[in-house]
Image (cartoon, rainbow, N blue to C red; front, side, top):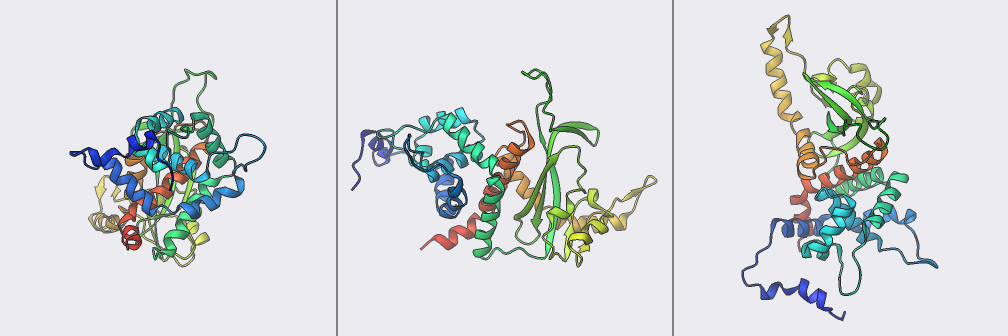
Length: 324
């Protein structure tokens, strides 16, 4: 039996707090504890993770992965994530830290872990592994794909050490508003509503260009907004048997084609499922603005956020499968 320290006893004194109830954070972390495939995700990173040698032994891989996910879920910078673990009993319990025996991994340790994932493009590998795990649970990719893109903003100010904007980010116009940053393009299964592919580009890249990379090739139907209309050649290059169900422009010469408008409304009932993924990534996880400079760093964050969003969106089914 593991000896209990005073710090652990202080963290586990819920039985003495008569009026305490689980918070939303407690409930969320308990759910993620059950449904995140920790062992499978650690297997992806383990070949690249530092091994114990003559120097200071590395922090446990699963502990660092949990800390990294906490950073995504609560939209925390490296230093803020360290402070949150020092401050929150719920987060320490989730990560598995006993302050009576060990320190909280500091911001520099988390920074090095992030750079390890970015260097080896492990964000994409984690996204792919989550897809494999979900398919093994019966959430298989179907024959319909919804494609869409969203803008992730970046600082446009030049008040920094380089006196310049991030050279890998660009500006684009949407409606009458100009935006500066990058775009996250995703392909979502029309039946399950889960993302199965993603591409990250600068914001000035048109939505249609990454279209073939968002398809898995076995589609029968492709859904998208009017930015993807008349792209039958691009669709056929990757999914030759797919039919184009993208929305069409309804206004010509100042007149509205009510027939096309009604068809677009029917298509949008299915196409709207892609917005659920964006809502989780941008509203729940807070990834509406970039945190780092450069596309690769933010692409790793984007792929990881999409992997976590897929797990979150099918949490009900996964919870039903893990309960005894």
